[in-house]
Length: 77
Image (tube, rainbow, N blue to C red; front, top):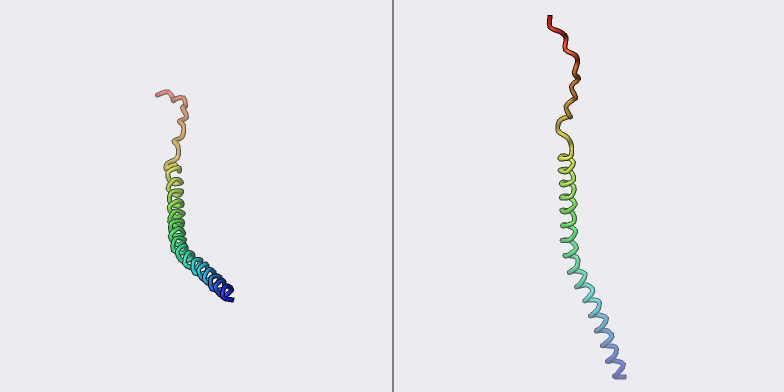
């Protein structure tokens, strides 16, 4: 009977310890997850800004000059 009681207390201690460990680890991971999400948002913003900058640089500012048409010059009178 005494052995059964000891095993019950051990079982209860393992169960409570595992539950409290899971809770503590999830709280610690929640803080890290928030930091990762913030960094992810900032990197996405940086990517869109760089993409816009590349598009601005790739566009031509002025149109290409037209080729001249060489006509025969009229004789001077």
